[in-house]
Length: 258
Ligand SMILES: Nc1ncnc2c1ncn2[C@@H]1O[C@H](COP(=O)(O)OP(=O)(O)OP(=O)(O)O)[C@@H](O)[C@H]1O
Image 1 (cartoon, protein in one colour):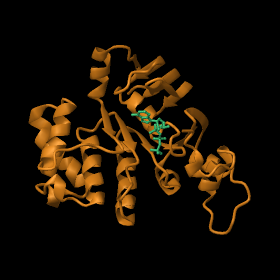
Image 2 (image 1 turned 90 degrees about the horizontal axis):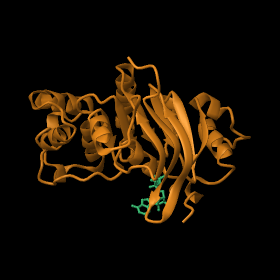
Image 3 (image 1 turned 30 degrees about the vertical axis):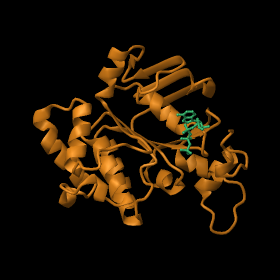
Image 4 (image 1 turned 45 degrees about the horizontal axis):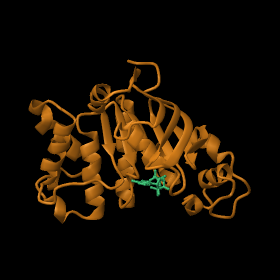
């Protein structure tokens, strides 16, 4: 088992068109579950796209599984070991859930002999085994999100990137989701999840990172972030307050610099 970081970014610059979103970012992803917090527009999705090797860095270095990623051949090799759930993922509406998960397994080059059993395992893990033949277009928002999670975890990737995975899940499903990612982490998958729900970070993450304006503002355990909480109003969540302290009192939806 590798002892170094699963993913490492050094002096990353990244953006769209002529607009720089991330500047001079250094970041390591270690084993376990890492939660990524940050206001709207902080650059979380942009960071995921970089880690998933979809958007090559403008400058700086990306290393995955101890190897530098500087060309398409290296990126493709790394991609087989990465499961990625984008915030908005595409699918063919007429596909069954099984077809969708199998298709994602094929994209990740999971051996075809194992694809059926792995797709079935992934669907069972997200509680969709009894709906395996339902069409994607017939799913509720929460079910669709769970189908996306199944597609990201199929084949047990070494690095799992989940962009707002719990949006649309009901409380029982969120509890199941937390247990699922904890169990994936125990079996060796490094998980990074972005969320606006600090409860998910408190309950499931070993490490929490706070990103704002494309800069890493904070990295610690959830407990340490909660300890930064300034005096709280009754009913406040200490982790949320600690997060606000790191952001300097900014409200979570005030972060978009656009
Ligand atoms: N395809 C794109 N083209 C141009 N600008 C983009 C594109 N995608 C994102 N941006 C801009 O990049 C900035 C960072 O966006 P990003 O989606 O990475 O933030 P985020 O932290 O994931 O936000 P949210 O919490 O709202 O999902 C924003 O200002 C956004 O408008």
